[in-house]
Length: 284
Image 1: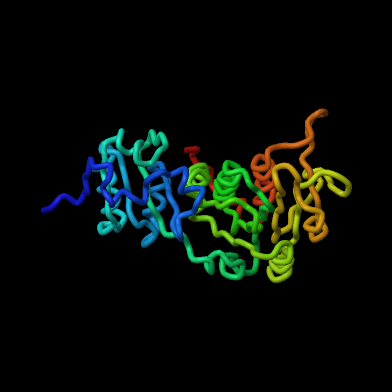
Image 2 (image 1 turned 180 degrees about the vertical axis):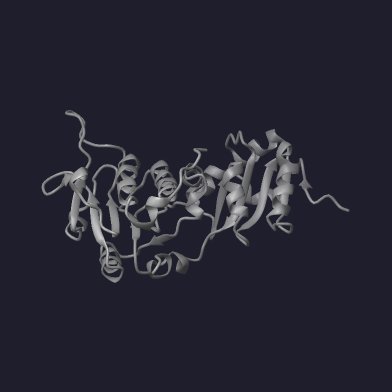
């Protein structure tokens, strides 16, 4: 039986072209593709049939990756194996975990609000992100959303791509699983989502009209709105919100990182309804 691992030590092997110069390709885009790295992210990519186009690993990971791919129904997905030093030379980055995969980006229609957001009665909790540009924050927000079983993340047009290689890594692959609605007209799309899903919009914001989070009784159907890392939630977006809440802090401290603040708020929101029954998970 032929080896199902495609082994090469040739830096010019055309099968490696998709993996060359990762930093430059991250900036230029990949034409309907995205790149995942680390064993955990790649494992989550492989768990979704038809998502992964190919996998590239350092030699030491080849046998274990082949077993995983066969076990998850990815027998026909090409698995490329190269020496560790060649992997770094090809990609241009230090990939100390030695695992990469090329995936097919979801069609834009899958991220349309009318398709991505569940339509149902009963509890519904969404997270709306306005103009977030920090790749770590985007990744953390998806990990947080997965932890609290958020029904969907709503992104404004200016938000960073959650499938950007580093954001996907920070999310630990959860950006592949949490439903995403990418808006094209903001805040008009936010208004339509609010009305069509009968949601209470709750802004995480300081300033006039905001009240301490401990005084707020979270509704069964809500959308938490968090704003840009520097500017916060825009005025026109705040005008759509039904409530503004703040997290009380010690004197001299005026703000928290947006992902930290969202985690505190979403933990409160998810005490309502079905989310309250969620079990604890082991940090990874």
